[in-house]
Image (tube, rainbow, N blue to C red; front, side, top):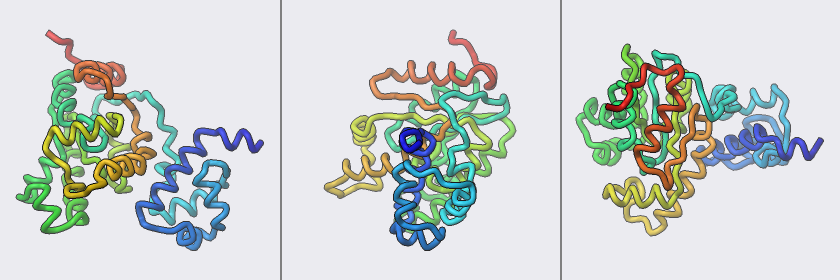
Length: 263
């Protein structure tokens, strides 16, 4: 039985999610143990993917981490999806994933408008993102992000939406995306993220940091369990942009809005 538990992918995914959520909140394992009433040893086994917690323990974990239980468990996400015609398509990924490049082309391929959430935030606040972070901080950005996201999700016509890389760490926003959109993770190797960000001339929020690449790898590793919950996961490293666009379109076209054939 122990071998089965050790190899079960759902438990490994749960462990990675619990560990990442705990670290994002800067909690020690002892703090999480106090919040859940579980032992540190048991939580260590959960985070390693070798424990099989009961439903009640899972509920305690979800409540302590302020996350819907279905999101903590991954909601049974798979690599493919059926996308109702009325749903938006949301592109996920760290900066450098290619959302701003892939998004407009995918929108044209699907016959939908492309919307970049950060552009909506800048329009609503009257500030560039860099100015917004300097003047008001991340908490203000997250509030503006949530408001902008709610407006986009309320749109009648489905669109292709590019969201910020950190939206997956915001429980309410990510839950809204997962329930109201077809989520697509544009997965790439850390070196590809890095090269693309440098090519854009944008190193925020890691500017003037000698360990910037190491930080990028750390952030990607922390968020990967959440990105992996996407309905569709597409590798972009080593592929042409048109290949990525076509792969996404084919993966969602069965139930998505009508896909226009290229001229």
